[in-house]
Amino acid sequence: MSLHNSRVLIVDDEADICLMLSHLMEREGLLGLTAQDGETAIKLIALKKPDLILVDIKMPGMGGMELLKWVKEFDPDLPVIMITAFPHVTGAVDAMKAGAHDYLPKPFEHTKVVHTVRRALKERAHRKRLLDLADRAAGDASLRELMGGSESVMRIIEKVHQVAKSEFSVLIQGETGAGKDLVARAIHQLSPRAKGPFIPVDCGAIPDTLIESELFGYQKGAFTGAVGNKPGKFEVAKGGTLFLDEISNLPLCSQAKLLRALQEKEVCRLGATTPLMTDVRLLAATNQDLTHLDTASMRSDLFFRLNEFTLVVPPLRERKEDIPYLCQRFLSLTNAELHKTVNGISDSCMELLVDYNWPGNVRQLRSVMRRAVLVAEDTITERHIDIKKVSVSVVHVARSIHNNPWNGHSLKEIVRDEVNSIEKQILIRTMEYTGGNKAEAARLLHIDYKTIHTKLKQFGFKKQG
Image 1 (cartoon, one colour):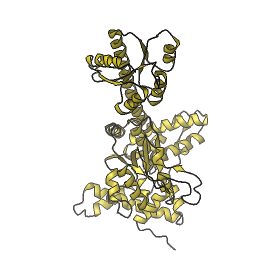
Image 2: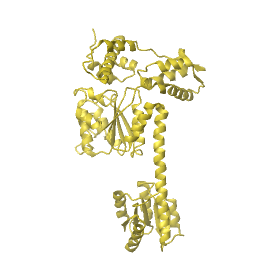
Image 3: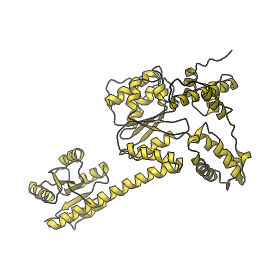
Image 4: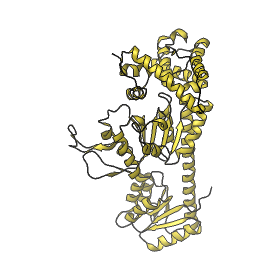
C-alpha cells in the first residue's frame, strides 16, 4: 500500500523540532507541513486536509489537548499522534483516552517516529478502504434487496456507481411508484456526501404558494404567519443531497429561482436581503418525459441544468422477473409487521401477479401484498388478491399500430404516441367514473393530484356538464 505524498502536519512551538520532523517526513516520501501554534494548525487542517497530525502536548496558547479535542470534532477519523517530554505522566494517558492514536516521547528516535507515523497512515488507509467497500456493498445490497435482481436493476446499479462519486446533477425518470426515490437514496449513500443529510422534497405535495418558502426558507415577518426564522431545504441539506421529486410540478416562477440557486450556489430566504451560500448536490425525479413538455410546464434551461446525467427506472411490467422476489419480500415484511405466519403464495396466484401489468408499479404491488397477508390465514391465493385489470388490451394497441401510417416516425415516437392515447382513454374513463373528481381519480390511479391535473390539461380534458 503506497503512502507516497501523504500529508503530515507537525505542530510544535519549537521551530527546530518542526524543521527536524519535517525533513524526516520528506525523507520518507511524505509531505511535511508545520505550525508553531494551535490556531495556525487549525487553519492548515481546514486548508490542506492532512492525513495525520503530530502535535506537542505542551504549547503556549492552545495546547495539544485542546487541539486534539478540536480535531476529533472536525474529523474523528484523522489520526493524531501526541509528542510529550513526559510519556509516563497523566497527560499522555489522558491524550490516549481523548482519542489520540499514539504518542511519541522526547527525545526522538527517528526509527520509532517513522514506524509510528507509517503504521498510523496504513491503518487510516486500510480503514478508509474498508469503509468505501462497505458503502459500495451497502448501496448494491440496498438496491438489490429493495428492487430485485433482474438485469434491469443491475443496469441501474451500474449507472448509480458511474455517477455517485461525481457532483453531477442527476435526473431520474420513471413512472410513479417505480422506485425513483430508492435510486436517489442509493446515489447519495454511495457519494462523498453520504455522511451529510439526504433531504427529499415532494414537489407535487406542496401548494404552489408554499414551495418557495419550503425550498429557500423565510425570515420572521416575511409574510403573515411567519413568526420566526425558518431555514429552507437548501440550508437543511448543507453538505448533503437535496432530492426534488416530481420536479415538473414546480411552478414556472419557482423553476426560475431554483435555476438561479443552482447556478449561483446561493439562496435568499423570503424577506431577507443577504444571500446564503449553498453546498448541496441536487437530484431530481419526474414521472414525465421532460423533453416533450412545452415551455409552459417546464423551463428548458432548468431541464438542461438538471439533465447532466439521466437515469431511467423501468416500470415493473418491464422487469416482471422481479415480481416473485418482491412478492416474497413484501410477504415477509408484512408477516413481521402483523405478527402473522402466512407461509407462501400459490402457483396460480403467482401466475396472476406476474401476468398483471401493475399500472401503480412496485407501490401498488406492495399495497396488494399487504392486504393479501392481512386477510389470508395460511397461503395467499387468487381470492386474496385485489387487482382489476385495465380494459385496454394489447390487441387493441397492435391493431392501432397496424392501421396507422407512421410517416417516418421512429419506434420510440410511435410507442410514445400509442401510450399517450391509451393513457388518455384511461384518464377520461376514470374521470367519468369519479364524476370529474380529480382527487378521487388520482387516488384510484395511484398518482399525485398535480400529475393528474397536468395530464388532463395536456390531453385537453374538460369536465362535462
